[in-house]
Length: 280
Image 1 (tube, one colour):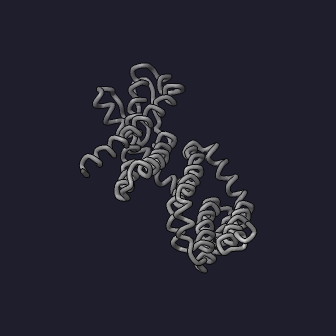
Image 2: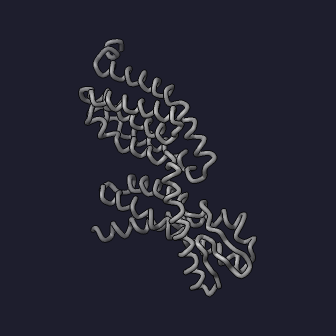
Image 3: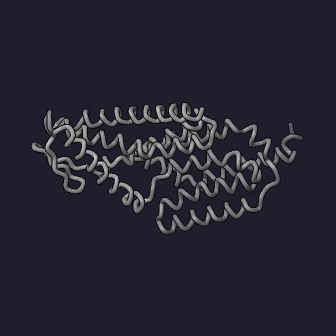
């Protein structure tokens, strides 16, 4: 037992444990802030699922990872220095996104420094998957959310016109005979987009081994999320017109979100089945 500990692999594993403990101490505040954001911001509530899935993917590849472990890479030390440097800059500049990105850069550096390039390739997917847990910077979020609001508004206006529901759109506000509906940031679809993208990546990983299919599934989640969110906004408008403004609020609004997400998930499965059928 003692001989194993002092063997090269044993020393490296001990170093990894110590480095992981140091990593947790260094990034404790960053991880606490991440959990706080997942809890209070519904756009990123899926973040609670991302680390467990990433850890499972890493654990699933553990045998291949240790089999591929080679000579430590000095390049890994540079990654660690760069990550810690970004952490310091982020803390000094009160830039949360920088500190959160530095967490992943430092993690890549630790693996690369101790186990080498080949081992890093084995774990690179689980590490990159953790990107999905990091909230988008506000400046980028706003640039994406507002166009999605307008797109959902236009789609809802067209759908309501098809249903013979009189509606007039002004920007992201839809005026009906009895009320006006504002397609707010929460209704832009970015929430369902982030959740559906995460689901599509996980589904593609477990259901298909072909890289091009996995990429296609991730890309397909974007129009599916936009389309289904447009149907949700249109459905809300129709409910408000036929059953009164109260139908667009409360339980119906929340329940419709779950129905739309389940429908979007079913569409992803259908897309995958279609791809498999055509690829035969």
